[in-house]
Length: 276
Ligand SMILES: [Zn+2]
Image (tube, rainbow, N blue to C red; front, side):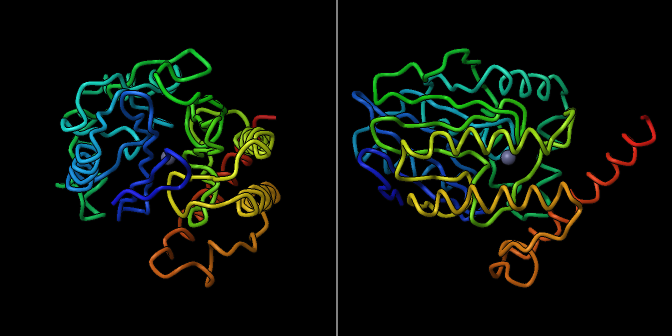
């Protein structure tokens, strides 16, 4: 079911980790951002768009994580964009012939493996531009180094909407890019500053996972995420509603995500210390 969150901007929510697919109405069709996760959900979205007489004229993936790189044949053959770094990361992933099998194996524990179509996975065209080339409201790309390589938030300028990718969630804590990065904490704080810098332009925030929020919520989420990352940096246990006993029912696993990245950061610091 499509839900309008601003004029000409609609959200289709997945039952998998409350993932949001975002639809932006343009002149001759829609821009589809992070299209969805499960086969039947994407078919549902395709049916909704067909009913509205709105073909998909462009796609965009906010970052190179599997649940943001899917596509369904019913969406057609419009170009699917991502930042240059995002596209390069997917290309590198798909250079491994076992990449899709690895995703399926990773999904075994979630119980949705057979419902995630991978045929059209990751066919992303690198976009060096600062805006998405399409016939519709101007969509500005806010690229930053946090969570995943080439992660991008989008500002849908004439609609006052911030599409945050996997940042600013009310259910997931900040998940740092602990891969090949020099200073994931500082990167994340810089990205939050960047998002704070566009907060005055928007009235609605749509996270990759979680609830859509208004202006007050946007500011609260930036502050909450900053406090979480600072606590991580200082090795403190964050007092955060998303981890520990205050987590929403069904979201208790977010505490495991937190424990895992706290441990990996501590290991990184030890390695860094022994080098210096
Ligand atoms: Zn992600």
